Length: 116
Image 1 (cartoon, rainbow, N blue to C red):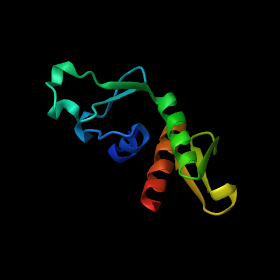
Image 2 (cartoon, rainbow, N blue to C red):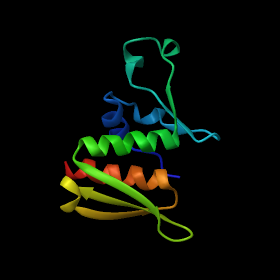
Image 3 (cartoon, one colour):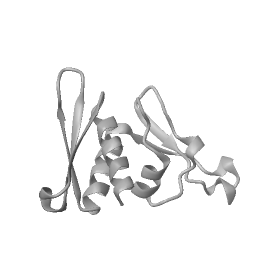
Image 4 (tube, rainbow, N blue to C red):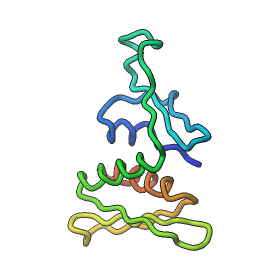
């Protein structure tokens, strides 16, 4: 599974995410550091830990605040699709395909970031 980008996490959580700290564990939780380790000793900062499905929901909320709506659906038995609808659900329309629903949401949000 592709992890969300550093830029996406930085925008969703309004912090500076360290690219080298993003990882996923066996329980589908993504962890990352916010870059505060440069100010404080690393051992005093615990990484942010969030379930991948909760993160996908937060990403959809972030997209909505950017005037986009992301709708996900099963495309066929192997793929999910994310449909990006912009500005009152009428203007920009883009389909993104991925193996998992969260991955489709992350790809859609990365597309929105590039559009900004």
